[in-house]
Length: 164
Image (cartoon, rainbow, N blue to C red; front, side, top):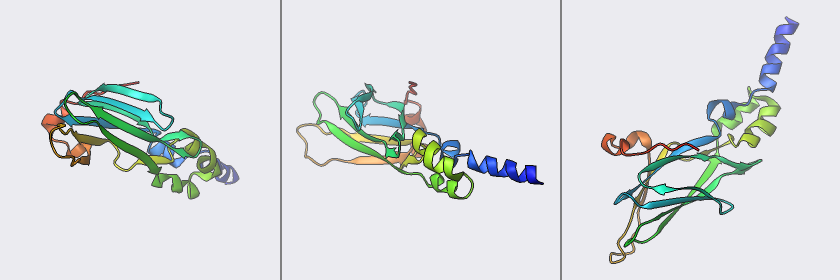
């Protein structure tokens, strides 16, 4: 019985809920109307982590360092249209708090913060639909963030999966 209790205690001590359940990165899709716009994603340090054309998907890390959430700036440009810049900010992941019950101190204080899994994006696997405005039109801007499962099948098939 004592060995069983030690095994349970070790499993709880050395697990990390958010890392196991959520992972430390998520897929992001960027599309525009019209398509073939240039997309550039920079991290909080101003380093370009992705560059390509819409429609596209790419993987973004949720953490930016120990106990630091990721923050990105998505810039969509196209000749004849106004440049659009959208912020993307990671927030605390609810699975991180499961460490209190089953993950232990190691998961809560070291593993999940180090991997970045303690954070998530508001809309996991989100699709950013950037409406590019002609320079001649009004200055009204629209950003629509939707779950990729809500993207129509005909538009979803046009996305291109990229890997790092």
